[in-house]
Length: 253
Length: 210
Image (cartoon, rainbow over all chains, first blue to last red; front, side, top):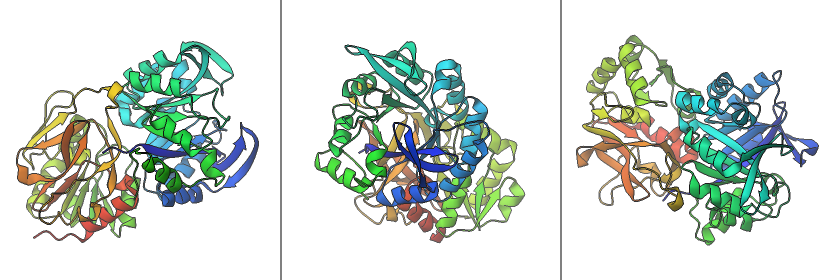
């Protein structure tokens, strides 16, 4: 049976892992390769790296980091942050990423997603959708870390990106993000039931129960979490044991 | 020496590194001449069937691979590198494969997101080995373990004897691994399957088909 995936997310700045709450008080949290090896040993199903300080000048640093990680852990790697063009995607894939996450650039230029899926295959393209609740069962896409509204309905947008060939939607609730009160389950479920792409739930995890909710009630294919794993509250193994006890299919090695 | 067939598509560093971690010496193979110098062959695969088979023919590697396999070199095909072994694929039209294993490459049935059945089949899933008899030596380390799959098409071998392991997704059972004689090929990605994958690659490196 296909397992639900548990994906730790690591924020990266200048090729180093950083930790921070809501992007403030960011502190250096060490070497990405060491962090990747730690999660590998715990049995993470994939890893996601997001370059939160992506800029033109530090691209090479990011590529080197991706190569270092890819040479040391043997699991799927997703890399995002500052991806604007086909060349950025190609460079990341060549560096060793298996999937590339596109965020703002997809909103600015939706054709990029279609071109990228055609050229590199759907399974390599992840579109990050940052959604904010604007009414009963209505959500809108936001960019720039949730500060800039776009007027685009988030569910329609996720479906369009799926139709354009994105293999996965990394769906973050901007309302839930950072609250540790759990995923926006209505948002997650609505998107998961309406698109053919895989849905990765993100934003708001504070407990293991939240992971279970995202996968069962939210019907997500995978759950992404950062802080509950980074700060050592829970290991991936503990999370999987909890989910397995609740009858959710996970990979236990 | 393991010849890793490089036909210019996608990143092959991770598979080279995985083979090295598993104890192999890797030689990149881009020409038929380079292929002559290796003992074992790994054919990885990303991208579209048509482009892959086209490039293999263009570089003279298609016939060289067939000859090398006939000479008895242990061969491992991965993902698309498994699919190109078949006679024919129905991905974006109809395309002839290498014809080393009789059968076809078919698409999964259309997705049903409301039931959680999505295409591509992506994630960790089983390797179901035959209930009776010894498993294939290369696949033996995968008993009771899951591996990482990413694909929208699957191999349907004509002969039951060529099916080495299965996997099921939705209501659908498909070939996780196929092979005969000195050929073994897998739909999943051992190079992305952590310890289970490395154990399988090691088993391939140690494998001595008669």
